[in-house]
Image 1 (cartoon, rainbow, N blue to C red):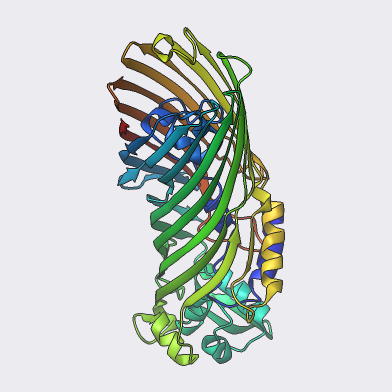
Image 2: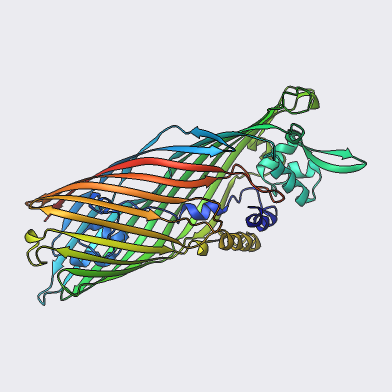
Length: 513
């Protein structure tokens, strides 16, 4: 694993402590599983060629070109999940995370021109990502300590201890480690060396507790049209609103049983938030060679977002005989005063990857002219996301571009393109419908050792009559991912394997007029 992080750490140590961009920050905004209406989610999210649903504006806006009437839609939902982890052979479970979820809601205004062609305008909102989770894991480590990351940064800075504590150029964690003597210098064999007290233990109990909240809510404006009910085309302008917050507590304690090895425990706590706005576009087309077949193509441009990060942290170290006091604590307020720094916020721009979608649908039993005779459909989407093309850029002219160049280079070597496959179908029984679907998202990581993917199984029912429709869907989700408590440049890195299981219940109510 070390080869993937050496470059990352070589560049990480040269920038300000407020720049918290990591590979995970790029993935957070790109490896998403968009929600939608209950109908779309019931068929595995496959809306690239089917159309006729307001959620088309977030997948393939050409689908709005099938509208010949107008409708108002509301899609409330509820999401619940549990995170399980395994770290160094120890399994743990985080507490359940429940949250209200908003599927695609809004209105579509459709009309038909005298020559038989149709056009539509849509205004909608959709929760494109939900960041609510609770990750907890613990394990016993005889190989490394989280304090070693502070040693590495301090050594590479070439500062003395007093200079390092007082400079805003180093991370809060490193400065706190130095202030509390968790990291110190000592003369060993006649040579001055940088040491971390936990390494004296040789056996450490490590514990990570991380909670995240927030999401990406996108407001979209769409225009679509069709030519003689054969070729449909559309355009969406998306305005995503990004909210992300993370609170974490990382603790190491001595598991050796030695009460006089200069280390008892240390705890690092952090509050982090990232908020911003973005802009993107979605373009698509659907071709209908006959009343039973449709094929679709859509392109999603990168989202360009302006992000503001804020961070605060604290550390408590208990070092037994090494200090004359039981414990030493420090927080970011004190460090900011020492460095005459007034802010803990940082601005930057982020570009998400491109997304390409191809799709096909087969409708059976009836015709487009008489939908009451239709018996159902089968539809499938295949999407490709260029995760390695994510990148960061300074938010102002006073920020060094070289740091972001290094981060962007790391992202290109750390991630790869991923595939999303969607398959679903519907059977129609007069005014009632039954639906089922499946969606799978492949791993975005270059390293095959990092097991990560997402699988969703869905089913739902619907009712349509007299200008009103009600759809109800349940989606079961099974996801795998990884979490690193810390990363070191000179050692292989341990990580927790995560499994997230949960479900979403969504109900869509709509009125045609």
